[in-house]
Length: 484
Image (cartoon, rainbow, N blue to C red):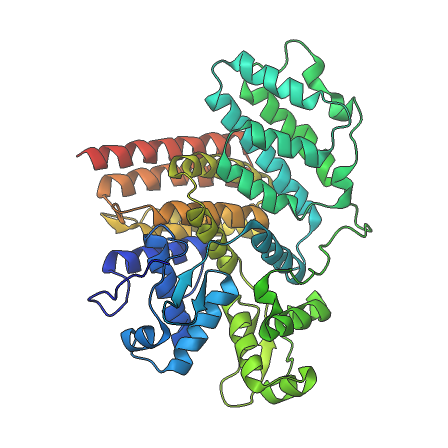
């Protein structure tokens, strides 16, 4: 096991790393936590990310880390428990021990996504919608990478014309055909939430089977129009209001080592036995003493469980000894952080991430044009006015609030999670351009106003074209500034 020597800056991340961490928080909508164990855990995780997630490497023993961060061993042990709870590190004991970086696994990530989907009462309609959007992203990538449009069309026809094809199987095959490792990882996570009906074989003339026509689909537009206008409404209709598959079932305790710990078992029991509609209202589930008696464990185990729930944003500990633990509806920020870490740890490609991110954002802009309600349009029109005030070089983090406003209008939390996760992954690869030059700020303002105008006009096609022009324009501007 490799060991990392203490750094001159007492173990804290460098200034660039801290600036990147702030930018990632602005991307995911996360908040800087004030409690010391979370601050230190996040700082160590920043170091893992900046180092490319060196699995198997040690970042120091318990005593050395406690000294480096100027905290007692009790605080450092809480830090270790937070990182172990995330499945990002573990403390190895003995002379050659230390805080060892762990490569997160897909099964654990899917389990956490399932837990979030259950607690937040994620509707399976949005799952099917996101699955269909990933299929549209795959079509975009396939046409952009194929040698000729005919080759792309023939590949798609072969996939769609297969016998005994299910919605799950079609999406999986399309994503594989895109040759995007990152999209495949996203697809595996979203697929874990699909209802059983997604496994049902589709009829041969499913949704009109346009691919059977010789002249169909020689460009991406025909396939995408069919996906948006025919397949997506059909898919959404598969889960009716009274369906027993409309919401995600409570997750099972994952079979990995971390869930054998008593604290993790307490977390799982609390979350799986409390109905989501009760959990999300802010339900008092007891204080340390109540919970220790209920589960028959030491209070230290309960304190550890509380830290894990706070880290996942599923509960808040009231200030004061024995005051209690109150449940809460979590945001997607902790999950976005876990997805981002998984992408970095598994060495996914930044260029692939940029292609997937661009296609997701284009799809999201179109969905926002379809979904934006009156409140959204009022907020977006105010956003246009605020955009007019953007002047001069600006930190990139400042621009993220505008992006999140636009994204919110699509009303699909799962799609938003996918976008945030990929963008956070790309952010950790940035070494420069943490401040947008004046020319880039001006370009961003102009293009974003055009996207917002199309969304407010409920112009799906216009919003998607405007978002694509925005992404391409900003990419050219970034390359130009790097070359200057």
